[in-house]
Length: 125
Image 1 (tube, rainbow, N blue to C red):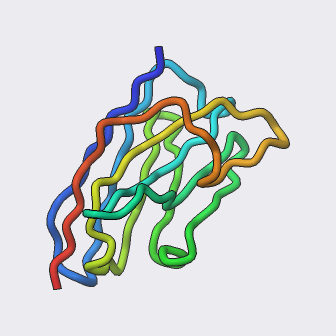
Image 2 (cartoon, rainbow, N blue to C red):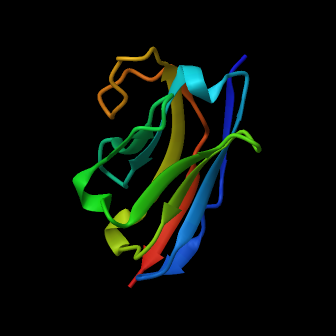
């Protein structure tokens, strides 16, 4: 059974950094597309970053150069390093996973099967 558990959310000042973690169980990173989504108040959920079984990454334009998604195979965690945070990054952040085969896309348009409960990030100016 796949289980995802996010942590690391906090309140920080604009320009600061946070590192979110998603503890994963019940799956092998090599066979899954992993992603971070966020949902801002009053907005639809949006993909922030994704990483496929080979490590290829996708980022939404607004976070390119500021956010980095990476897998820690030793600790079975998916991390999201967020630097130079902006007030508009304030949101609930979710970890997601879906089966992935080589050649499949891994991006925000994937219909992800597994989701965590989320961790809250607040950025104040």
